[in-house]
Amino acid sequence: MNGIENESFIRLVAFAGVFVVMALLEFALPRKKRSEPRLTRWFANFGLVVVDALVLRALFPVLAVGVAFWAQAQGYGLFSMLAWPTWIEIVLTVILLDLAIYWQHVASHKIPLLWQVHRVHHADRDLDASSGLRFHPVEIALSMVYKMAVVILLGAPAAGVFVFEVLLNGSAMFNHANFRLPLGLDKIIRSVLVTPDMHRVHHSIHRREADTNYGFALSVWDRMFGSYTDQPENGHDGMVLGLADQQTSKPSQLIWCLTFPFRRKG
Image (cartoon, rainbow, N blue to C red; front, side, top):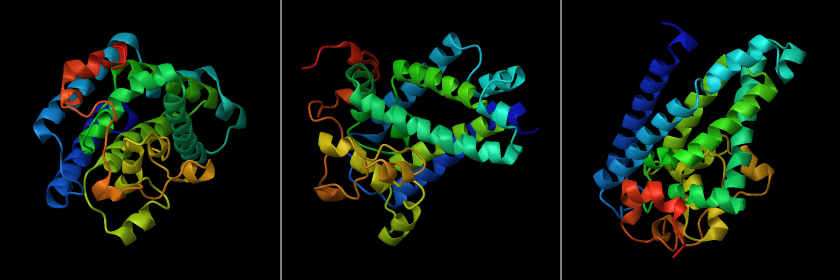
């Protein structure tokens, strides 16, 4: 087996490995007490993962890595014109795609129609590794279209797109995980990567806090673009997670998650 030819297998192993490690850390070193039973939430969150996968398979004959192969074969994109060494293109692909996802995340909060769909992610009243996978299928489909467009514009190498996809998936589980990092270690890690404490602020019921800390993998973008909040106003133990108008058990139900964007507020 090697690299991109076994993309699905490698991604599955990476996903399972990261999730198991995060789940064990959450059990051993929990950061916040849960509001909802873990298994109830996991059923909804992983149910969304299954629906998302089925929607992507139905809508797209190939995904981002396949589009990268196609774009390079056609000579499309910035990197095709520059012809830089492959390793430089891979590093730049990871960095630029992470920047693109940062701005996508900002847009999902600022554009009302996108926010209505993205609210499904924010409705989770607890955070753990499964929360990093909790996205409505409409948002996942729109995100894939956006990601494919960026890949084509860059002429990104398939290997770089693959590395980014694995990094994005793993970092989403890591920064949503409910485990306690020593403050000193958190400070060191968040100088490069988004930590659980940093991202937890983004899931506050207070919109002024939820509209900060948009980064998924690299923490630099929030500092660079003025959207960084160091700590929540009420502290991590005192902060309330989720949506202010959805503080019930309903966000832990799969059908509720699927239908929520299409209901009137209230």
